[in-house]
Length: 548
Image 1 (tube, helix red, strand yellow):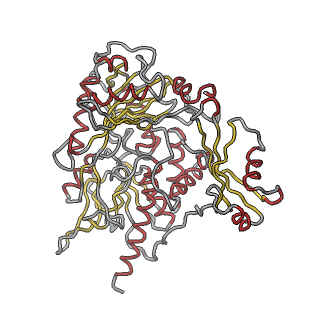
Image 2: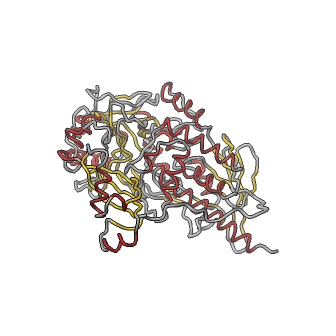
């Protein structure tokens, strides 16, 4: 099979345009092309007056070798890559201990799925509830301010990604095409097939709920076991005479002990109590950079017009997104990076707190992306130098600003909000304008500078006018900023070695966003696959070393 890239066609091309473009590119007659399929579709909107679709197409031809010779040296014509996923191992007969997966978010889900497909029958523990019960609790918080610390946007089946835009693209290097495996499993679980071809696939919360349920059923059918509302509170660690550590199992909140030689740690970026437990047990944990800021909302129609011009609303383009970044130079912010994060076209700003007495924001979209507003995080990069105090100091830093936001919102889980015009002018908002904030339980107009570090306030004030040069109207006075966005990524990293295990605790596999190795559903899923493969290979190595 051949792969043709960069086939550029008009936005409203006819039904036969792709076939004609393939024939022209390969200089072949129709009888020499046996079949073709679209591998990827993107758009080029750099010229709003002539937006084009860019296709990558896989083609079967009668004489592949001859075509490659004819087009030797042309970078847009090559053999299609082998994207089939192949398991790295099978579970050995008589496996005495089943591997444990802690956490049922994207990385834990795919670690469990791949382990199950290889015959390892994993046990998956999650502190939260099954996804539908968790959804009820989350909506209850949004509507009635009733926070369940163990069942919310952060905790429960599906992880934090369930209440997001459901974006399924990433900038990770993926030479083995593991991302394709993630997408294929999602399609098998009920996702639309278009996610296999569009350049920026997304699913949305409602579809993710049913997909997560389907994947759970698959894992259980393959011998895996789920245990929800089973919080892991301790790790059994054995210390050898040479000082090395080895995982021997886990302890649940109810006192139950489960033995295991291999434990996949897929706890997400908000499991603060688990981070503290790991640190206490001597597992290597280190502080890492993350970001802090706000959510900003504009009318989606404004973003559509700016990005697509007269083509705004075209069904093949959908709701427009954006990606912005700026390096600050002004006093008080010099050297700080400000960027848009987790942009949600046609979505809502959601309450994402997981601890009492704190306000946390995030963004979410449904598959249709047809809500009135666009929202994105506008966040400022910070490093451990901004929060000295040890591996867990970033958690205390996050918590401080979340509690400040809670107080500024009125201590009711309402979020502090401010009009962009007021924020840039350095005055508190007392009312809101034409842009109606989407955050529930509600917002309180105030001064967001009381809810963020001074350097973050200065950095965002510098960046917003710069962003307006790219998105006309970005600094519209009535655009709304809602605080605070603190959970952009994990504030810690759990270092691991080349076998995927903790650098000082063998048998423990830190994985996903919580361990500091992923950012989003796709990269977390890929990391989960790698963890499952490492568990399988290390299990076989240990079996080979065991006395006969």
